[in-house]
Length: 219
Length: 154
Image (cartoon, rainbow over all chains, first blue to last red; front, side, top):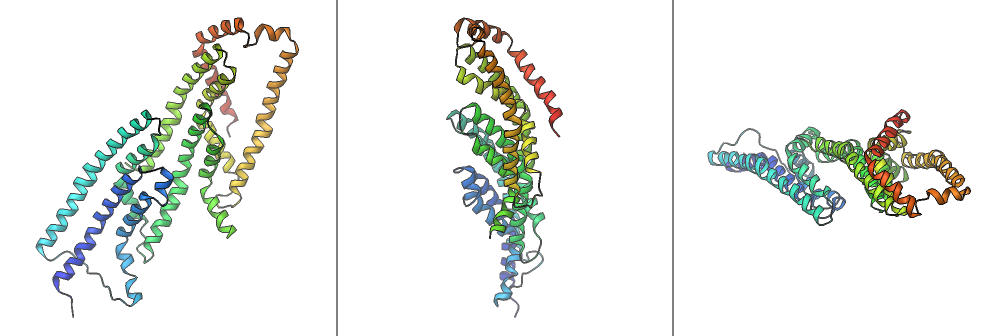
Protein backbone atom coordinates (compact mmCIF):
# COMPACT_ATOMS: atom_id res chain seq x y z
CA UNK A 1 0.00 0.00 0.00
CA UNK A 2 1.37 3.40 -0.97
CA UNK A 3 1.86 5.84 1.92
CA UNK A 4 -0.55 8.78 2.11
CA UNK A 5 0.38 11.89 0.11
CA UNK A 6 0.78 13.96 3.30
CA UNK A 7 3.34 11.54 4.77
CA UNK A 8 5.28 11.39 1.51
CA UNK A 9 5.28 15.18 1.23
CA UNK A 10 6.41 15.48 4.86
CA UNK A 11 9.35 13.19 4.07
CA UNK A 12 10.17 15.30 1.00
CA UNK A 13 9.93 18.44 3.15
CA UNK A 14 12.37 17.05 5.70
CA UNK A 15 14.83 15.95 3.01
CA UNK A 16 14.65 19.26 1.16
CA UNK A 17 15.23 21.15 4.41
CA UNK A 18 18.36 19.13 5.24
CA UNK A 19 20.72 21.54 3.36
CA UNK A 20 19.18 24.46 5.27
CA UNK A 21 19.75 22.59 8.54
CA UNK A 22 23.35 22.06 7.44
CA UNK A 23 23.76 25.82 6.95
CA UNK A 24 22.42 26.45 10.48
CA UNK A 25 24.92 23.89 11.80
CA UNK A 26 27.76 25.62 9.93
CA UNK A 27 26.80 29.00 11.43
CA UNK A 28 26.75 27.40 14.90
CA UNK A 29 30.13 25.78 14.12
CA UNK A 30 31.55 29.19 13.26
CA UNK A 31 30.27 30.59 16.55
CA UNK A 32 31.66 27.54 18.38
CA UNK A 33 35.11 28.18 16.93
CA UNK A 34 35.49 31.13 19.29
CA UNK A 35 34.33 29.28 22.43
CA UNK A 36 37.43 28.13 24.30
CA UNK A 37 40.79 27.61 22.64
CA UNK A 38 41.06 26.77 18.93
CA UNK A 39 42.44 23.21 19.50
CA UNK A 40 39.61 22.44 21.93
CA UNK A 41 36.99 23.75 19.51
CA UNK A 42 38.51 22.01 16.47
CA UNK A 43 38.75 18.49 17.89
CA UNK A 44 36.07 17.33 20.30
CA UNK A 45 34.58 20.76 20.93
CA UNK A 46 31.53 22.66 19.73
CA UNK A 47 33.01 23.38 16.31
CA UNK A 48 33.66 19.69 15.66
CA UNK A 49 30.19 18.76 16.91
CA UNK A 50 28.35 21.21 14.61
CA UNK A 51 30.58 20.39 11.64
CA UNK A 52 29.74 16.73 12.12
CA UNK A 53 26.00 17.46 12.16
CA UNK A 54 26.32 19.65 9.06
CA UNK A 55 27.97 16.74 7.25
CA UNK A 56 25.28 14.36 8.52
CA UNK A 57 22.51 16.63 7.15
CA UNK A 58 24.25 16.98 3.79
CA UNK A 59 24.70 13.22 3.48
CA UNK A 60 21.31 12.29 4.94
CA UNK A 61 19.98 10.40 1.86
CA UNK A 62 23.15 8.30 1.77
CA UNK A 63 22.86 7.56 5.51
CA UNK A 64 19.21 6.54 5.13
CA UNK A 65 20.26 4.15 2.37
CA UNK A 66 21.72 1.95 5.15
CA UNK A 67 18.25 1.31 6.60
CA UNK A 68 17.20 -1.50 4.17
CA UNK A 69 20.26 -3.48 5.25
CA UNK A 70 18.91 -3.31 8.85
CA UNK A 71 15.61 -4.78 7.61
CA UNK A 72 13.81 -1.43 7.67
CA UNK A 73 12.34 -0.53 4.26
CA UNK A 74 13.13 3.13 3.64
CA UNK A 75 12.56 4.16 0.06
CA UNK A 76 13.01 7.90 -0.25
CA UNK A 77 10.35 9.78 -2.22
CA UNK A 78 11.67 11.69 -5.19
CA UNK A 79 10.29 14.78 -6.91
CA UNK A 80 8.79 17.97 -5.50
CA UNK A 81 6.32 18.51 -2.67
CA UNK A 82 2.73 18.03 -3.88
CA UNK A 83 0.92 19.73 -0.96
CA UNK A 84 0.81 23.46 -1.57
CA UNK A 85 1.27 24.81 1.96
CA UNK A 86 4.14 22.39 2.62
CA UNK A 87 5.89 23.49 -0.58
CA UNK A 88 5.44 27.10 0.50
CA UNK A 89 6.79 26.29 3.98
CA UNK A 90 9.87 24.59 2.49
CA UNK A 91 10.48 27.43 0.07
CA UNK A 92 10.01 30.05 2.82
CA UNK A 93 12.32 28.31 5.32
CA UNK A 94 15.03 27.72 2.70
CA UNK A 95 14.75 31.36 1.65
CA UNK A 96 14.98 32.48 5.30
CA UNK A 97 18.12 30.43 5.96
CA UNK A 98 19.82 31.40 2.68
CA UNK A 99 18.99 35.10 2.49
CA UNK A 100 18.70 36.08 6.15
CA UNK A 101 20.76 33.67 8.24
CA UNK A 102 23.60 32.96 5.81
CA UNK A 103 23.86 36.21 3.85
CA UNK A 104 23.05 38.74 6.57
CA UNK A 105 23.31 37.29 10.09
CA UNK A 106 26.51 35.27 9.56
CA UNK A 107 28.18 38.36 8.04
CA UNK A 108 27.13 40.45 11.05
CA UNK A 109 28.47 37.79 13.42
CA UNK A 110 31.77 37.85 11.51
CA UNK A 111 31.95 41.64 11.87
CA UNK A 112 31.42 41.33 15.63
CA UNK A 113 34.17 38.70 15.77
CA UNK A 114 36.57 41.16 14.15
CA UNK A 115 35.66 43.64 16.90
CA UNK A 116 36.17 40.93 19.49
CA UNK A 117 39.63 40.20 18.05
CA UNK A 118 40.60 43.79 18.80
CA UNK A 119 39.07 43.64 22.29
CA UNK A 120 40.90 40.34 22.93
CA UNK A 121 44.15 42.09 22.07
CA UNK A 122 43.30 44.98 24.41
CA UNK A 123 42.85 42.45 27.23
CA UNK A 124 46.22 40.88 26.48
CA UNK A 125 44.67 37.89 24.74
CA UNK A 126 45.18 36.51 21.26
CA UNK A 127 43.19 37.85 18.29
CA UNK A 128 43.68 34.77 16.09
CA UNK A 129 40.72 32.62 17.31
CA UNK A 130 38.26 35.47 16.66
CA UNK A 131 39.78 36.20 13.25
CA UNK A 132 39.56 32.52 12.28
CA UNK A 133 35.94 32.45 13.48
CA UNK A 134 35.13 35.52 11.37
CA UNK A 135 36.78 33.97 8.32
CA UNK A 136 34.85 30.72 8.80
CA UNK A 137 31.54 32.58 9.08
CA UNK A 138 32.26 34.58 5.92
CA UNK A 139 33.16 31.40 4.04
CA UNK A 140 30.18 29.22 4.99
CA UNK A 141 28.83 29.06 1.42
CA UNK A 142 32.21 27.95 0.07
CA UNK A 143 32.57 25.39 2.86
CA UNK A 144 29.10 24.09 2.00
CA UNK A 145 30.12 23.74 -1.66
CA UNK A 146 33.34 22.00 -0.59
CA UNK A 147 31.43 19.44 1.52
CA UNK A 148 28.97 18.85 -1.34
CA UNK A 149 31.90 18.29 -3.70
CA UNK A 150 33.34 15.68 -1.31
CA UNK A 151 30.00 13.85 -1.13
CA UNK A 152 30.67 10.61 -3.01
CA UNK A 153 26.98 9.67 -3.17
CA UNK A 154 27.78 6.20 -1.80
CA UNK A 155 26.30 4.83 1.40
CA UNK A 156 29.63 5.65 3.11
CA UNK A 157 29.36 9.32 2.05
CA UNK A 158 29.50 10.68 5.64
CA UNK A 159 32.83 8.98 6.29
CA UNK A 160 34.04 9.91 2.79
CA UNK A 161 33.34 13.60 3.46
CA UNK A 162 35.11 13.41 6.84
CA UNK A 163 38.13 11.71 5.21
CA UNK A 164 38.27 14.32 2.46
CA UNK A 165 37.98 17.17 4.97
CA UNK A 166 40.84 15.67 6.99
CA UNK A 167 42.94 15.49 3.83
CA UNK A 168 42.04 19.10 3.01
CA UNK A 169 42.97 20.19 6.53
CA UNK A 170 46.24 18.24 6.62
CA UNK A 171 47.36 18.86 3.05
CA UNK A 172 46.12 22.38 2.31
CA UNK A 173 45.38 24.37 5.47
CA UNK A 174 48.07 23.05 7.86
CA UNK A 175 51.06 24.02 5.64
CA UNK A 176 49.66 27.58 5.51
CA UNK A 177 49.18 27.54 9.29
CA UNK A 178 52.88 26.63 9.53
CA UNK A 179 53.60 30.15 8.26
CA UNK A 180 51.59 31.56 11.16
CA UNK A 181 53.52 29.27 13.54
CA UNK A 182 56.83 30.72 12.27
CA UNK A 183 55.48 34.21 12.99
CA UNK A 184 54.40 32.99 16.46
CA UNK A 185 57.89 31.60 17.09
CA UNK A 186 59.50 34.95 16.23
CA UNK A 187 56.98 36.75 18.44
CA UNK A 188 57.72 34.39 21.35
CA UNK A 189 61.45 34.84 20.84
CA UNK A 190 61.18 38.62 21.05
CA UNK A 191 58.85 38.51 24.07
CA UNK A 192 61.10 35.99 25.91
CA UNK A 193 58.58 33.15 25.81
CA UNK A 194 59.35 29.52 24.88
CA UNK A 195 60.19 29.17 21.18
CA UNK A 196 60.69 25.41 20.91
CA UNK A 197 56.95 24.48 21.10
CA UNK A 198 56.34 26.76 18.10
CA UNK A 199 59.27 25.22 16.20
CA UNK A 200 57.93 21.73 16.96
CA UNK A 201 54.44 22.84 15.89
CA UNK A 202 55.79 24.25 12.61
CA UNK A 203 57.45 20.94 11.80
CA UNK A 204 54.28 19.11 12.90
CA UNK A 205 51.99 21.25 10.73
CA UNK A 206 54.19 20.56 7.72
CA UNK A 207 54.23 16.79 8.36
CA UNK A 208 50.67 15.98 9.56
CA UNK A 209 50.13 13.20 7.01
CA UNK A 210 53.44 11.61 7.89
CA UNK A 211 52.61 11.66 11.62
CA UNK A 212 49.31 9.91 10.80
CA UNK A 213 51.30 7.29 8.85
CA UNK A 214 53.67 6.96 11.81
CA UNK A 215 50.76 6.30 14.19
CA UNK A 216 49.20 3.72 11.83
CA UNK A 217 52.58 2.05 11.40
CA UNK A 218 52.96 1.85 15.19
CA UNK A 219 49.59 0.09 15.37
CA UNK B 1 35.18 33.99 -0.28
CA UNK B 2 36.73 30.82 1.07
CA UNK B 3 38.42 29.90 4.33
CA UNK B 4 41.50 28.76 2.36
CA UNK B 5 41.89 32.18 0.69
CA UNK B 6 41.30 33.94 4.01
CA UNK B 7 43.94 31.93 5.84
CA UNK B 8 46.42 32.22 2.97
CA UNK B 9 46.01 35.99 2.69
CA UNK B 10 46.16 36.39 6.49
CA UNK B 11 49.47 34.49 6.57
CA UNK B 12 50.89 36.46 3.63
CA UNK B 13 49.78 39.78 5.13
CA UNK B 14 51.16 38.95 8.58
CA UNK B 15 54.42 37.50 7.25
CA UNK B 16 55.21 39.90 4.40
CA UNK B 17 53.63 43.18 5.51
CA UNK B 18 53.24 43.33 9.28
CA UNK B 19 56.34 41.45 10.42
CA UNK B 20 58.88 43.44 8.32
CA UNK B 21 57.29 46.65 9.63
CA UNK B 22 57.48 45.36 13.20
CA UNK B 23 61.07 44.35 12.45
CA UNK B 24 61.95 48.03 12.09
CA UNK B 25 60.30 48.70 15.45
CA UNK B 26 62.22 45.83 17.08
CA UNK B 27 65.52 47.18 15.73
CA UNK B 28 64.64 50.60 17.15
CA UNK B 29 63.90 48.93 20.52
CA UNK B 30 67.25 47.12 20.29
CA UNK B 31 69.05 50.43 19.85
CA UNK B 32 67.24 51.91 22.86
CA UNK B 33 67.99 48.87 25.02
CA UNK B 34 71.64 49.07 23.94
CA UNK B 35 71.82 52.75 24.79
CA UNK B 36 70.34 52.01 28.24
CA UNK B 37 72.93 49.31 28.86
CA UNK B 38 70.52 46.35 28.91
CA UNK B 39 72.94 44.14 27.04
CA UNK B 40 70.96 41.00 27.94
CA UNK B 41 67.85 42.42 26.21
CA UNK B 42 68.98 44.26 23.12
CA UNK B 43 70.30 41.15 21.36
CA UNK B 44 66.84 39.50 21.51
CA UNK B 45 65.24 42.59 19.93
CA UNK B 46 67.98 42.81 17.30
CA UNK B 47 67.75 39.12 16.35
CA UNK B 48 63.94 39.38 16.46
CA UNK B 49 64.06 42.35 14.08
CA UNK B 50 66.29 40.43 11.70
CA UNK B 51 64.01 37.37 11.84
CA UNK B 52 60.97 39.57 11.12
CA UNK B 53 62.59 40.44 7.80
CA UNK B 54 62.93 36.79 6.82
CA UNK B 55 59.63 35.14 7.78
CA UNK B 56 59.24 33.70 4.27
CA UNK B 57 62.81 32.44 4.31
CA UNK B 58 62.30 30.74 7.68
CA UNK B 59 59.14 29.05 6.39
CA UNK B 60 61.00 27.88 3.26
CA UNK B 61 63.72 26.56 5.58
CA UNK B 62 61.19 24.50 7.55
CA UNK B 63 59.62 23.31 4.29
CA UNK B 64 63.10 22.21 3.15
CA UNK B 65 63.59 20.32 6.43
CA UNK B 66 60.24 18.56 6.08
CA UNK B 67 60.52 17.86 2.36
CA UNK B 68 63.42 15.41 2.34
CA UNK B 69 61.21 12.29 2.45
CA UNK B 70 57.83 11.38 0.98
CA UNK B 71 54.70 12.88 2.58
CA UNK B 72 53.56 9.39 3.64
CA UNK B 73 56.87 8.30 5.12
CA UNK B 74 56.42 7.61 8.87
CA UNK B 75 59.99 8.82 9.50
CA UNK B 76 59.34 12.30 8.10
CA UNK B 77 58.90 14.05 11.46
CA UNK B 78 62.05 12.45 12.84
CA UNK B 79 63.91 13.30 9.65
CA UNK B 80 62.70 16.91 9.88
CA UNK B 81 63.98 17.18 13.45
CA UNK B 82 67.24 15.57 12.34
CA UNK B 83 67.63 18.15 9.56
CA UNK B 84 66.90 20.95 12.06
CA UNK B 85 69.52 19.64 14.49
CA UNK B 86 71.96 19.08 11.61
CA UNK B 87 71.49 22.64 10.35
CA UNK B 88 71.83 24.08 13.85
CA UNK B 89 74.95 22.08 14.64
CA UNK B 90 76.71 22.38 11.29
CA UNK B 91 75.64 25.80 10.03
CA UNK B 92 74.65 28.02 12.96
CA UNK B 93 77.19 26.84 15.54
CA UNK B 94 80.23 27.34 13.24
CA UNK B 95 79.06 30.91 12.55
CA UNK B 96 78.54 31.36 16.30
CA UNK B 97 82.03 29.95 16.87
CA UNK B 98 83.43 32.52 14.45
CA UNK B 99 81.68 35.29 16.36
CA UNK B 100 83.11 34.07 19.65
CA UNK B 101 86.61 33.86 18.20
CA UNK B 102 86.22 37.50 17.16
CA UNK B 103 84.89 38.49 20.61
CA UNK B 104 87.66 36.49 22.29
CA UNK B 105 90.29 38.26 20.20
CA UNK B 106 88.80 41.63 21.17
CA UNK B 107 88.75 40.72 24.88
CA UNK B 108 92.26 39.36 24.67
CA UNK B 109 93.42 42.92 24.01
CA UNK B 110 91.99 44.13 27.35
CA UNK B 111 92.71 47.79 26.72
CA UNK B 112 90.66 47.70 23.50
CA UNK B 113 87.75 46.22 25.43
CA UNK B 114 87.81 49.01 27.98
CA UNK B 115 87.53 51.53 25.16
CA UNK B 116 84.55 50.14 23.32
CA UNK B 117 82.60 47.69 25.50
CA UNK B 118 79.00 48.81 25.88
CA UNK B 119 79.05 48.23 29.64
CA UNK B 120 81.21 51.31 29.96
CA UNK B 121 78.84 54.20 29.96
CA UNK B 122 80.76 56.87 28.09
CA UNK B 123 81.32 54.83 24.91
CA UNK B 124 77.89 53.25 25.28
CA UNK B 125 76.18 56.63 25.26
CA UNK B 126 78.16 57.89 22.29
CA UNK B 127 77.57 54.66 20.36
CA UNK B 128 73.89 54.67 21.42
CA UNK B 129 73.48 58.21 20.06
CA UNK B 130 75.07 57.21 16.76
CA UNK B 131 72.85 54.13 16.48
CA UNK B 132 69.72 56.17 17.29
CA UNK B 133 70.53 58.39 14.32
CA UNK B 134 71.04 55.48 11.96
CA UNK B 135 68.14 53.13 12.75
CA UNK B 136 66.94 53.34 9.14
CA UNK B 137 70.43 52.47 8.01
CA UNK B 138 70.49 49.47 10.35
CA UNK B 139 67.16 48.30 8.91
CA UNK B 140 68.46 48.72 5.36
CA UNK B 141 71.56 46.76 6.41
CA UNK B 142 69.33 43.95 7.73
CA UNK B 143 67.32 44.02 4.49
CA UNK B 144 70.55 43.90 2.52
CA UNK B 145 71.68 40.83 4.47
CA UNK B 146 68.31 39.13 3.93
CA UNK B 147 68.29 39.98 0.21
CA UNK B 148 71.80 38.66 -0.24
CA UNK B 149 70.87 35.65 1.86
CA UNK B 150 68.19 34.58 -0.61
CA UNK B 151 70.99 33.19 -2.72
CA UNK B 152 71.24 30.49 -0.08
CA UNK B 153 67.60 29.47 -0.46
CA UNK B 154 67.31 26.52 -2.82
